[in-house]
Image (cartoon, rainbow, N blue to C red; front, side):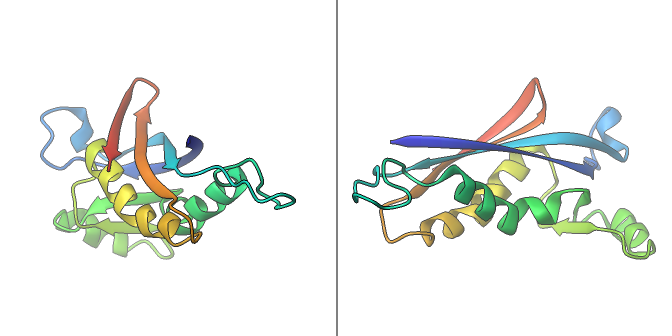
Length: 146
């Protein structure tokens, strides 16, 4: 069975070498969809009977591992030194320095890398992360899949 939970967060970024507007500091209302595959719980009387995983638990794990760190943060590539240094001058600024340029594709792949072990270790079942879809805008998204 396949289930999906959607969450939203706001974050800033820039694509340093972009040929157009995205090279400038800007932000997005991102949406992330987390798709899990697993068996339906058949244990009679269990709180999650009939579910692959309680949707609230899908949300709790995503918030703990990813969304709380990225929400209202500036997502910046570690090689974008001028921006990393500038953001460091802002007291208390929420900055996430990433090993990749923060394109939708790279953010989806990074989210998958971070979330995969969290869902795998959540239960003793065969639950696994199948896809992370990251919407940069309502019309543009990237999928990271197993």
